[in-house]
Image (cartoon, rainbow, N blue to C red; front, side, top):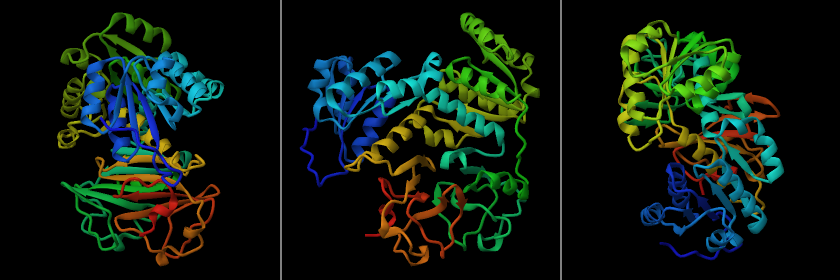
Length: 465
């Protein structure tokens, strides 16, 4: 275990962080935050869980109830900058953050997953003084719903409060981009900026001479209004689905079904547990609920898998979701979106024939990491608007606020910028545009950066020192 070090005023980028709960998300946060140089203390009731985390990562460990005043004091709550509660109990997470705020005067983040609280999160956040309340299942459902609106995409990340998207797709055979360089496709790429291309194991942040090949996994950033226009120009599917089949009736399925029904999309859900089926039938009266084993081939066929336009396996077992995905890919032309909870086999999963994969754990950790980086500033102001780990964790896409004059009012072509980094988009007072070398950053802009570097937390980090 590491020793708690004294933080000086000059060491403004180091935080004392307490993580309550050593489950999958807690461990991932301990890994990521300790790797970024913060001082981490984990709390869990399980001695084995605490021992495993503290021996694997450079963190302190305390065994006990994270909502206990005594345990929080032992963990150093009085000197903590941030408390993150990610236990399996929503109530415990909220209580832990409330006590931490009273005792330690620190920022607090709670994971709250129960649908009963979904409509009350802004109220709870305001009344309890909690910095962030995150519902990973609700956020995963939103991500899936975005993909169903644009089936040709592999993934869609949202920036600028939904006005800008980073979209990943596979370049089809005989596409008008194939065999041409970025410089040669100016008319086709009008209104979008290609920010990354994955070819086999290689990741390229491309320049003007880069030549596209069929099968490339291309990521671009564009205002939402330009995404569909671009896809139509290169003949990629843009029509939203009209129906969906979901296997598994858990929280994500519930949230997703509500969203899709509100958009006029027909929904079928296959769920094994009879009590859960009754609950879903009562809460989702416009959905068709099938009670049975979603991995049963006959039930899938009887439920109409061959005719569905989208198929989303959301069981609690990753292996089942993967098998269902591979079966659906052979049985139907539907858009298939797969939920995966574990992240330690991402390289293997990336090699399978799967359309889109959603990792709820990453949705949680990315939001919390973004907040933690914003807390680096001594004044606690938030320079990071949005943060995503992209290209299988090999790069970051970050939305940053321009609040430092040293990067303002100079044409981008004249700035000494770091390599392996791209300024992809500028949002200036609600007007979103892709910059040229002649454009300047201005105070108050928000800027989307795509970079192979890690740890950016303010706009001056784009400069080569």
